[in-house]
Amino acid sequence: MKISFSGKKFWYWLAVLAFMVCIFSPAQAQVRRMNVEEIIQSSGTIIVGRITDVREGKHPKYSNVDVTFVTVEVSDRIKGGNSKTHTFMQFGGTGMLTPGDLPQYNKGEEVMLFLYPESSEGFSTPVGLTQGKFEIITDQITGKKSMVNGFGNKFLFEKMESTEAMRKRKGQIAFQKAGPIEYGKFVSLIKELAK
Image (cartoon, rainbow, N blue to C red; front, side, top):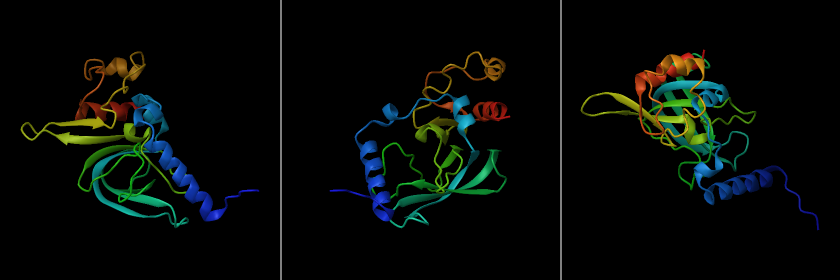
């Protein structure tokens, strides 16, 4: 008996398989740890801004594939393009059990995103999944901003102490193991490394 998958069945079973793999494995165990230089090098787009729309939909070509469309009002574009808004399509929906490794988005959330270049099927996602999505947090008392990614900023500075940009910045950004990083200093470092 020969089993063949074609067209819609193929994409359905591919989505089911991807979902099952993500559910049964912890996110940090599946995703390769990346330092900030690797994240920048893998990015097609680096933006800072506020999420203005998050909507679930279907892939334009494959009506059985759930996707999430995310729109960001860009306040600072570090790499890729020059428009004031950026919309990307990520696999998985907001109303279903979204695979655990994929970042989640909230309207009004302030973020810095390191996005992979768009795939041939139109998908994009943050580099290293939650490693490439930084939430920008404003202290309600001091007004100071800090940033943290889905890994709690773990691994960002691994194997980077000897790079030229890090030597220049050594006094400005502590080589912390994890936890929030000061917004201005981190953005300045990203701009320098992305040159």
